[in-house]
Structures are given as C-alpha cells and as structure tokens.
Amino acid sequence: MIIAWIVMFIYIFSIFIPFFFAFLTSLKPINEIIKYPVNYFSFKTSFDSYYQVIFGSAYGKYTLNTLIVSLSVVILCAFFGIPSAYALARYKFSFKKSILFFIISIRLIPPISLIVPFFILIRFLRLVDSLFSLIMVNFMLNLPFFIWISWGFIKEIPREFEEAGLIDGCSRLESLWKIVIPIAAPGLSAASIVTFLFTWNEYLFALTFSQTKAAKTVSVGMSDFVGDVFVRWNQISAASMISIIPALIFVFLFQKYIVQGLTAGGVKG
Amino acid sequence: MFKEIKKLSDSKFAIMLILPTLILLLIIIFYPFINLITTSLLSYDNILVHSFSGLKNYNLVFSDQLFWQDLRRSLIYVFGSVMIFFISGFAVALSLHKINRFNAILTGISLLPWAIPPVTAATMWRWSLNSQYGIVNDILQRLCIISEPIRWITGGNITMITLIFVDAWIRIPFTALILLAGLKTIPQDIYESASIDGAGPIQKFTYITLPNLKYPISIVLILQTMFAFRTYDILAILTGGGPGRETELLVKYVLDSAFKDYQFGIASAVSIVMIVICIFSSLIYWKSLKIEV
Image (cartoon, each protein chain N blue to C red):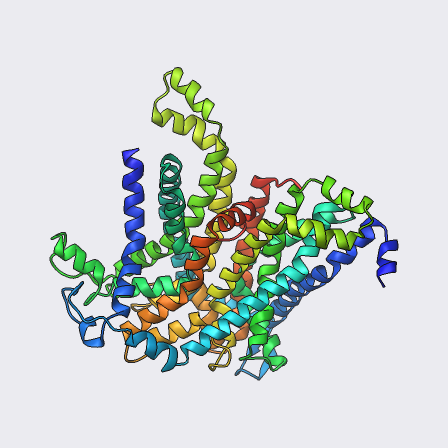
C-alpha cells in the first residue's frame, strides 16, 4: 500500500513538473523567464502572453482550424462508422471476418509511410494547404478505430430491444436510429471523444500538408514557435496551455468514457 | 427508396450499410500501396521531374550508411522506451489497482500525458529541461543532487536518453490503463486462496497476476512498440535529430528525403521497408491475440 502511494506520487510528480512549469512561465513577463535560479512566486503575474498568442499571432486562427478539422472528422466518422459498426455487430454476411480483420489491420500501418502517396495525391488535386485535405486524411486514419470501438459496444446490446422495435413496426434503419444509437450512446461518445483527441493532437499530416495559416493546426503552430529565432518561452507556454484545453475537459469530465473507449478498443496509443 | 430498403434481405441490408466505408477503406489501402511501390521505382531530379530507375532507390538506401545508423537508433529508441514505459506503466497500474481513494482524480491526472498533443508534451519538456533556465536542473540543484546544470537536450549521449524518457512518459498512461483493465478481471478469491496456501506477494505476482494478464500485456507491448517506431512529433520538437545526428531516427530519414531533398523515390523505398517491419509485427499481434469475431 505504501509502495503504491510512493509510485503514484513519483508518477504524478513527473506529470506535475512540466505542466506546472509551463503554466508558471505563461504568466511571466519575458525578463522573469531568463532568471536563474527559477523565480517561483515573487513575480508580477500577467496574462500578456495569452493576449499576444491569441490576438497578436496566428495562433487563434490555428486553434479555430484545429477545432473545425476535429469536429468535422468526428461527424464524418460517426456518419460512416456507426452504420458499419452496426452491420458488423448485428448481421451475418459473407467476408464479415475478413472485413473486421481488414479494419483492424489498417490501424497498424504506420502513417509516416502514407505521407508520400497522400502528399502526391493532394498536390495533384491542388488541395495542399487546405482544411479539406486535413479533414479527409484524419477521417480516413480514424475511421477504422471508430468502427472498432463502436462495434465492441453495439455487440453488447441485447438483441431483444431491437426485436421488440421491429415487432412494433420499426424498419431496420429506424431501429438503428431510435433504439441502437441511444442505447449505445456512451460507447459512441467514447469513440467520438477519442477520435476528437487524436485529430486535435495529430502533427505529421498537419505539418506536411499545410504551408500558411489557412490550414495550420495548433500542433504545427506550436512547432513554429519553438523553431523561431527568438524563442519566447512565455508565449510558447501560453500556447501550450491553450492546446491542452480539450484534453483537460475530456479527461476530467468524460474520463469514464475515455477509459472505456481505450480499453474496449485497445487499438491505438 | 425506403420501400426498396425494406425489401432487402438482412445480409444485403448489412452490406448496404457497410459498403461506403469499405470502398473508402479500400481506397486508402490500395492507392497508397500502389503509389508507394511505383514511386519507389522512380528517380527524382527535382520535385517535378522524375524518371524510371528500377530498384536503384533500394540500392541507394541499403548502401547508405546513414540509413543503417538511423535504423539502429530507431531500434534502440523503441527498445529503451518499451523497457521504461512497460515497467513504469505496470507499476502505475498495480498502484492504481491497490489505491481505493481518489480514483477518478488519480486516473484523470495519469491520463494527461496521453491526452495532450505530443507536440505540447515535447514542448513543455523541452522547456522544463532547458539547461540554462529549466525547472528540472533548478530542482536538482536546490536539492544539491547536482552541482552543475545538466545539458539534457544538447549534451551528446544524454540526449537520446532524454528523448527515450519523454517518449516513455507519453506511453505510460495507455499502458497502465490496459493493464489496469486486465487486473480488474482477475477474481480476488484466487489471491485469497493463494494467501491461505502461504504464497508471498512475489509468488502471487509471478503465478497469478502475470499469467492472467497475458492478453493485455501482449496488446500493450506489440501496439506500443509499433507506435514508438513511427513517432515523429516528440523527436521533431524535443531534439530535431540533434545534437549532430545523435537522435536522427528512421521516420526523420523518410521525411527529410521527401521534403528536404525532394527524393520521393527514396522516401517511398524507406516507407516500404518500414511497412514490412510493421506487417511483421502485426502478424505476431494476430497470432498472439486470436480475437474472437
């Protein structure tokens, strides 16, 4: 028991350090940052860095871009993923096993090896530097995962609910919409939240497909900051704090769903 | 139209539901593969001009000293990270399982490294480990553990270790979560009857806990190994491959040959090598999991 607390303490401390230091730095003026030993308490707190990052740079626009992309991906995944998961969970048809195998094995392809073909395609379609290309790529990367989680949840719903609905005269589509989706809602939320976070956090494709502020995301914006000649760590820290808002919201409000989704899916880290 | 849907047999109805997805997924599998293979046979003079060159790219890659160095470093990176996140993740999972208070808040905090963007995680660590102004050196110096600041990110050999630690830090939550879910499925009375038979904690761990966690352990090890193998964000932000080529990995080799040198052919050839490595590991994955459909 004591060992358990010691382990947790060390682990939580290792999490606390970078978050605390970034938060502290985000509240400091630039001259306080380059003081060593670190000044922990006696400085004038200011929210200038946040103001500068949101209104004085393109980061506000990046945040908006990321939000648009992530939400669109979740909606697309739900639209295509839920019917597919339902079909896989409920009906017998030929090649069902192969299809499931296919869906799970897609997750295992390293995205880095898709970069060159997708870049060539997107350049050919003249879609470089567009949110549309980011939405499509993230949609396709996350769809198998979304189906996999939803399939796991829909499979667990007792068939009697739908059969009752079918006897009452529901069509099969209606029973999906009116019976299965509401019952599977917690599982589907889990899939949606995890999909949202993966898209929000994605870096590789956002980096290679975007060139201007029209399509850059928070991750790309952040790496631009770090690469700048004048590294303003207080502004970078403020940007970091903004980029973790969705994670904070989801982790503390919908933790149960995330844990369910991840352990049910077990398909992505 | 809805009348016609009603007339369909169950299996045709199911295929109708899944067909759009299937077509999409087939496109994202077959297009890149065909494109990768054809591109890997092309020699690029610049971004627009290329000509067919057979297996020349593969020859170039396999005779490139840097490729083998990067592959070696990638393997060290993956192996080091696996060792750290597996042992720490297991320790965290066991602790979370033992502790019965504040579970929601502890799990929430434990999840954070996984939930935030890896770019942000790497950025925050880069700043915390800054050799001049960072908090890590500051704390270590205040506690008199070190006398001189350590150059975590620019200091040669130590950089790779730093990189591995940050990578493992990001992977601990998922590891702990999956193992914790596994731990919860082990019935408590097995432990109790083992205690009556006089088994100590280490015996219980090796004879009850480990065998019962075979499935989650294999999921975690194989998936996380592949995720570590393909990670680019942490490397890009934390070290950028430096100092020198100290932390250059295979992923960076692919990206640099594609977007710095515009050698799409070479990038594709290395991509294919990476896919082959991943397919090999996925086969082990399927063999060891035997997922029931």
